[in-house]
Image (cartoon, one colour):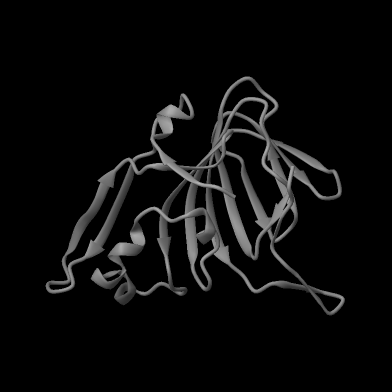
Length: 180
């Protein structure tokens, strides 16, 4: 999967999401602003914009984890870092009109919140769920894809939390990304 950094406004009519991140000052312990910006977008394919927003590298997160040593972890991550071992990842995804993602499975529990537009969540068994603004899809390690069957862009926020791989009949269900 290739990734290219670019301003999201060159890929979609939707505005760059604003990212506000706070941290504790390592000397004083006082909370302070770390980022207030609109981070760059990574396009996983020429048709899809992905915007990794914030990655925390340890679960459970403690207040001690949210000081200076982790400041660099608050920046954008590459697509190769989609699932952070023993951690979490917050992403904003834009999917263009009449586009779809490849069928894929990750070793994570994903909370996907649709904030703009309408999408169809398709499972491996062929079942489909139409979702729109305010809908939440909890993805629990199943093979799935997203489709935008409309003429408008769709945007959703995903919180991906690392999970142990699923064991089925003694065999581990590994992450996968099917080619289109």
